[in-house]
Image 1 (cartoon, protein in one colour):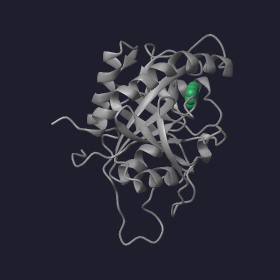
Image 2 (tube, rainbow, N blue to C red):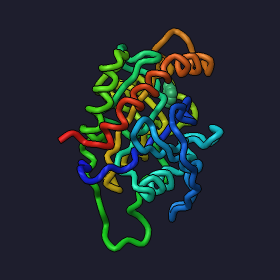
Image 3 (tube, helix red, strand yellow):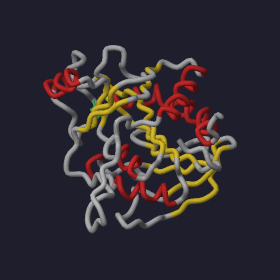
Image 4 (cartoon, protein in one colour):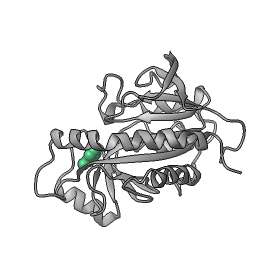
Length: 256
Ligand code: HPA
């Protein structure tokens, strides 16, 4: 837990959240990292009285597919400007019957099905091999603040769940989703990993704020369309923005 002086809260916006309305922008910064370029310039500003750094994960405009996001550069850049607590906003498919379109999920666990992504800072010319603990991939303190905000706002949300991270950019087959369900996954998305692990490697508090934008493959009687996804984004993103507005200050000022 980060209990020292307040630091800016990092927000990684995903599909449907390439800008943060309500953010009083004070500046932008293009940062280069040892791992290459982040997806977009970092946007600095205040959300209410809390300093925030916003980064559009897929670039702005939205053009970088999930498997081509430079997750290492994104996380490195955010840490470089002092971010210690990071909220990853993710559009996801719903697997659990209670997690349909426009529902909000604050997962407490994840399973990683991605492959071939730059997924660690601990490689190359190392002084020693390092294995970080990743038993609990999401910050419990951070999750409690998101849960509190969702509850206060009267939104439809789940306070836990297992996020299954797939490679994309294609959606899953029905059989893949059934397998994920047997594995214990409640939601499926393409960007939750390696982001969470990289944040953990740098000692950041990381939380995921998931918006369900479709039933996962085979979980409804129709195939998945972009129109359906857009409709759920339109319906649910106001709730995501409201949670962010309400939770960033407590996230930046831990309760005693
Ligand atoms: N699968 C994977 N990623 C997603 C989905 C999905 O159904 N919906 C939004 N992101």
